[in-house]
Image (cartoon, rainbow, N blue to C red; front, side):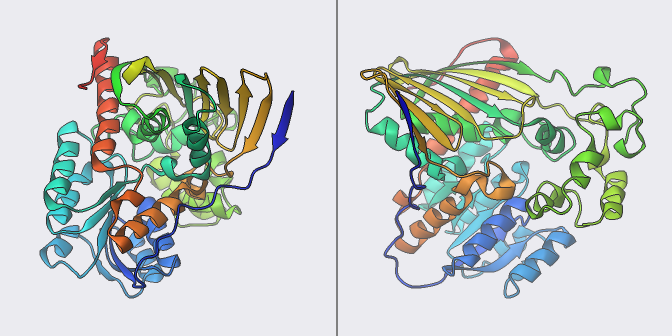
Length: 433
């Protein structure tokens, strides 16, 4: 027997009974993620952006429009040298530029909201957690998937015992064919030496999420994968270096012309992914950006080296197992998860779940989440709820509002590096208990 229940989206994380004062925030890196966090924090009426550091004139101009009272500098070191009165700093620079500002601002006593991944090396991630611990400041890593209404609902089902003891988990990260081309072939996260391995840049969310749901530490890791398709040898005959001049473009799945011109007229898509390409909102402006910049390049003629598919096998404490698949070759949509327990199973698609009861054989479908799996639409409510939790923590001086403490965030990153070592060496990696 099967029936469907449409449950209301779970309420936001509990609001604090905080002192009624305006929190003061610094923003280091005013790109897509930094501007999103800053704008939402200011829109709540609970926080004010007092300073922004970004070297890009276009982003600085946007920050000036959005936060006219904020001090603007082009280097975060200017703020570290003359620290403004503030409660916390949002660090959302490129991945490889996280560690220095994080360590410096921790030493200055600022609480920190840090975009994931924390850093691009294991050593630098440990430097950040050590600096936070020494300084006694709060650290919230932007594991936004922990905060979505959907995750809250799944976690509640698992923790209720309705599925019995969890035995295994299957989890899929469907990157999306055009998203892979945008961010990981043409874009800022295409090269490990400029950002980080794909598993950290894209899927540290997922490794953290599985551990959050399972509720146990990882003990063993193995992984396989590679860069299979977006390589010069797969370039179609007759393809040119830029999509605007290419005779193959009309039939190519990765056409930059089709992707970015197709964003025009859609406010969400104009913000992302088009906002990463250009401020122009006309066909002529978009085409000029594709001709002059990196986003018009043929996906088979880029300098990318991150993987386009990877699988990770995980063994948790007490023998619980999980398999994780990240692949470019999917529609762009929510993650998919199956959770198998001793009394029931759960099949989820990021918005709704179907729970099967092994005693009665019945199925129940629950709507837990909202549409919008991506950065352009707030990660299904995760962005806003993360900021609410961080502001609550600041206002009450209570880190329990943050769903991932520094040690837990470090663990999820160590799992990713263990998986990378396994993928490169063909070994099973064991993590310390």
